[in-house]
Length: 293
Image (cartoon, rainbow, N blue to C red; front, top):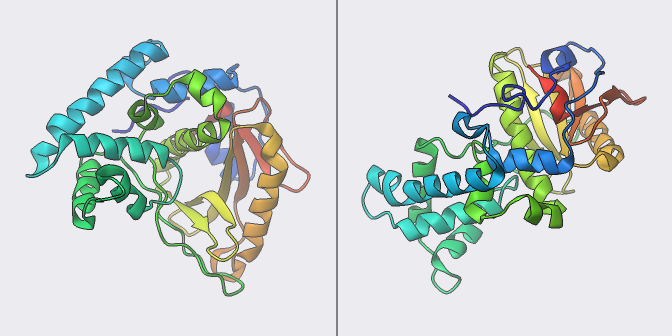
């Protein structure tokens, strides 16, 4: 059972269907009237049914208590020698690492200190416990057939099952995110991934990430249907980044061997903005506050 999406919680108008996008329809219609600050508040509150009517302050208190219980009770209950303080430091480190490839060395140092990082085996046990508790859901790497020799990164991209867990572990609210829009964009990416997973689940689709280790080029999410057809997604909090995101998507699509994978069903930029439309280059722009299954 996943947390609720923005459409389920009433914070997306639902006028743009993911299924319709994959069928080739052009997006249009008005999104829900949420500002960037409103969207950031939805990140802080999360998709938890018990918190839907609460403000960000009360939601943050509830979530911090929940994570404290995870560190002191739930994780230690899964096996011996699990230090609650280490678990809390791991959760905070994972909050800082939202939407980035998992860096085990950095996590080990964050938990144990740079002078004496924790053992790799201990980190594995901690991450396994969080996975068993269904708190984290890494995004695996997509390994498509390419037109040219391209070295792809294979490490998964870290995401909590709900973005509110990352911000709660860090103890940040809307004001802090507004002062650091780069960090806000990473947590926004986790919000969008949560909703994409919910909307695509009924289709039997899988989600992955794509990263070229040589050039650093990347695409935030690749949705693949059971029949092998696929679509690419870039996720940007601000509408102004649409041009760069479209360039990235088109360059990525040009690298994929269409004889093995066919052409993409859609190339989509999901934003925190106000407008849903199809660009002249064929790339669709969709506000997360307009998206639905």
